[in-house]
Image 1: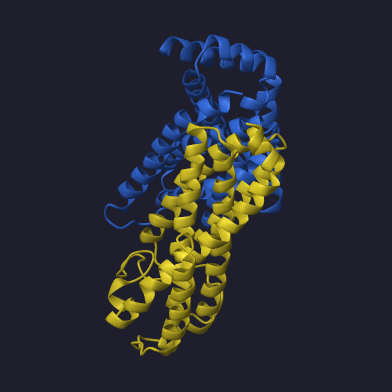
Image 2: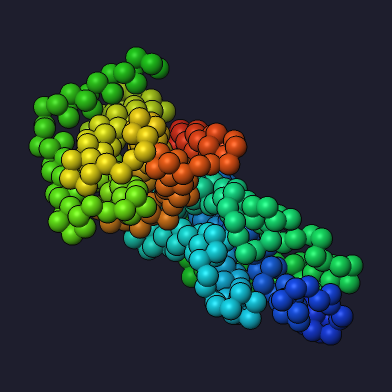
Length: 225
Length: 218
């Protein structure tokens, strides 16, 4: 029970997100209308993705400091779930865009940015698969992961602010690249932040399951040390 | 430290001068690519010209820089390991790749002028941007070449890893180049873009110096 409280919290927060997210009264802004409820699903995906990828980065740095294969497994599993969150964010965004911008893909700078981000992390997986030696794979992919992360951050944090975008936070538009804080009224905030925490915890939960599978699979390797 | 960097740099340059086939190989690669472009699109518009130019730079860089680590055999790396440190080695490689890429960029720019005409409003400014661009692209690909070489993979892996990573710089460069085509920029935007590219470069150099020592040890 002591170890599982956060899983219960994740389930509770997500149930809350789904019920409250669909039931509360939302402000009607422009052509967003009721689709603004997607904010509780689309935007938390990106928060979750960044948090998971950052965790992956931390484990990669830890691996370089102290070569323990466990860190490598942690880093790769967190990156994989981060990719999953990214794909989901892209899909929820495409659905949202269909109803507000008229088409699922309109070459918006942020859409391009996340497409590139996904390519970067797919390359990480390809690189991992390309190397057969386990220790070498761990080291090289840790180096690539760190390098990629620091190029990925400016891509999503700086570039979108420089160009015109349909998203909030572009050039000449209020807000940061994530969302426009002023558009969130008090009731939406009450659902939004729990949703962010809930989705992130769910991502972590998925990752820990994946990590456990790998730890059991590589039991012999890990205990040999 | 400076001494061993210079010695390593000198060794790379001397190798280049003595085994000229690789240099001319890349040069021929550039020339034939641009010739194919000339045959397929005669006299492209400014935007197309600009896009094509930077894409060609990207491919040239993958070919030119990939060689810098792949040519070092395992035994020779072991030898370098005994005579110099990782930091000196990567700095020497970075400088060497910058020099190589600058030459290649300027030569391909010349070929572009000859074959695909010169649609530029301000040629000198564009040459400056090409230099910055060549440096940025070669910096990113140097560390990637080291990673690819360590993974004992060919240039294909480098392209897979590098193309997504280079896009931020490439987009900034293409955007910046438009100034040489006569596009008017918002006040201060030009400075902001250039500083951003230089900032990214500095970050890449720092990351290369920090991360390469881990690749170096086996």
